[in-house]
Image 1 (spheres, rainbow over the protein chains, first blue to last red):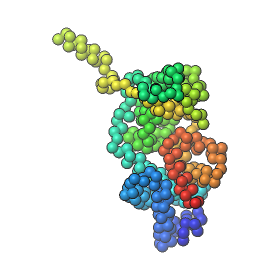
Image 2 (cartoon, rainbow over the protein chains, first blue to last red):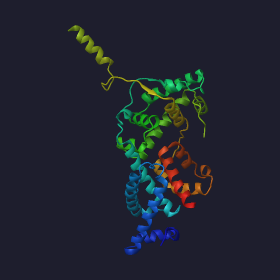
Image 3 (cartoon, rainbow over the protein chains, first blue to last red):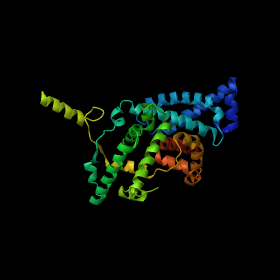
Image 4 (cartoon, each protein chain N blue to C red):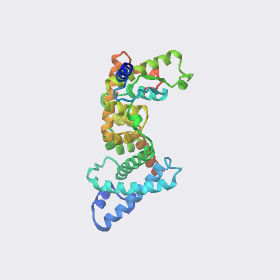
Length: 219
Length: 102
């Protein structure tokens, strides 16, 4: 039976069955995951065909196991295969991100310095789109925020904030380093962002003003 | 002897709490922009990555069908704007679903 001919209900029944019915369903599902990952991840691993092959194989096996384990949690709000892709994609990116950052020391990024922030980078200050007045305002906002980062955030919040929001290290990587789940790290960062935003508002800045000072487009 | 004691005392009181030499940290304009944007765009209530993950299949199918997902599922939409990891996963899922349509 091919993917197109199975309804969500049939997928669930076939995967919960035993013997040949289940084996065929697992085989079909594995093939669907492999093809999907190949199509979705090719742009991330275009230069490394050997890696893509091993990653896809590894993730496909893990995804099938996870799907079987959590089959009862599928609520039917999407196509079953979309739900399966979602599971496989998360597993794949988890592997990819950890692989990309495995040789990078996170210690520096997890230990922000106690000193005052120096400035925005001198080269970037030469960006012609900002007038000297705006650059001064940017510096003031950054210094203000930096003071709150150091004085108003907990050590955990500060570490996470610097690593993820300033240095751009994936949350998954930082979460592992900090011994927590990605979800818990998001909550930690959300609390930190709320705290910083409140300080900005209390200091008389408006959200519109911040977007304008940094030339950002408000979504 | 006295001079060493004074120098020791001065070193002690001017040392950072961790005992390490203080370094200054610089932030590039790009990093500063990112920080400002993330803070200014923060909402009181935001979905977490796990909550978004639970809804991502439904959200992506609606997006591929051309529905106005920003209006239909605003909290998921907002999270995807704030979280690069979830956005990356969403874009990949979307690209797979779109490839299957073609």
